[in-house]
Length: 388
Ligand SMILES: Cc1cc2nc3c(=O)[nH]c(=O)nc-3n(C[C@H](O)[C@H](O)[C@H](O)COP(=O)(O)OP(=O)(O)OC[C@H]3O[C@@H](n4cnc5c(N)ncnc54)[C@H](O)[C@@H]3O)c2cc1C
Image (cartoon, rainbow, N blue to C red; front, side, top):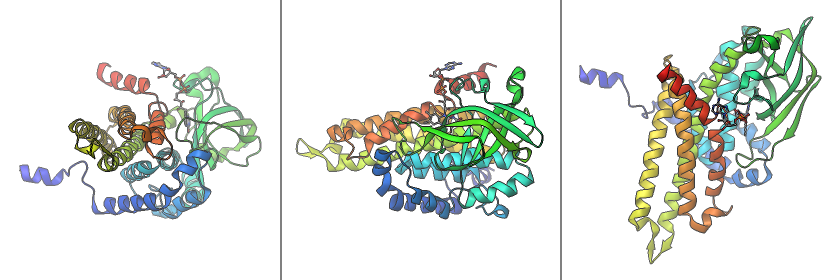
């Protein structure tokens, strides 16, 4: 009986053969093709267009899209593995892949009609980046206080307003945009639309100059009487809040994956460095206090990874995962900051300069506690589940 149960319940971190092959192919690609670009992309705050093309060729921009639409037909867990592996080398590439898969494609798969899936999924798999536009200047944590307006007009909706902080906006061709059809109805007026780059009245505005994940574009979106065909409605009118809540619950696991990848990247760099760097006549890895700091960071990374994998596997199993997703996001982002900070310390002066990779991990870590729901909002979700 015990033996049978053990066979039916594989360890959380044990990968199936196909997951392992997938993970290894991304790790190899990230080392060979992403690593050489990391510093330059960070300094110029620009994602390499050639790299974006290669991400499509590798099949990482439509991981869960069914084969019928040209995708790889993978599971959510594959997306998590991809985001983790890219983020181990560059969390900016990690978030590009994350938004594409865990927010944009996820929302289309769940809420898109057959017609929408046929029109947009093959493009997202082949060559078109997606973006997810919910936040505005006056509505971040209070996302449903958004004011971008949608007005029905014949066979179209007319959108007016501004979105802020939109990841991938510089590269994207397809945008999921949340607007309200009826401000008086509160969250019940919120509706999701698919807007294409080039639509009249739609412009991608100012690009933010950021502390971290600098190669990931974050821009303002401007809608001035932008006509969106009725066929581009995603989900039902007034049900956009459901689209947003449900996709963001999953998106949070993706951010958890970004953060554990980042923490592993920082820890791997620190381990290599402390074995090389000599002080007092020996490698600093030989000092017990350094060994304990490395061990403590490994405990953190392992624990965070378990929370992320658990949330992702629950999601793939069709089980509730709301609390687990919030737990994995808050914990992984704290671990990422802690481990990246330790890595900077262990690199000494070299940790503070751009020639070495860890100062970037430290800068990049901060975003994990902010986007897709700040840490306070994650705590609120967890507390609500516990306290009712
Ligand atoms: C680099 C980057 C990329 C982003 N990408 C996207 C994207 O692709 N799409 C998108 O739609 N948005 C995106 N965002 C926006 C992001 O999701 C918001 O910044 C985030 O949700 C926080 O909103 P805010 O900035 O308005 O902060 P605020 O909501 O003003 O929060 C400020 C502080 O107040 C706290 N706070 C607020 N309300 C409460 C409360 N009720 N209880 C306790 N504390 C509270 C917060 O925890 C935080 O510490 C991005 C942001 C950044 C910086």
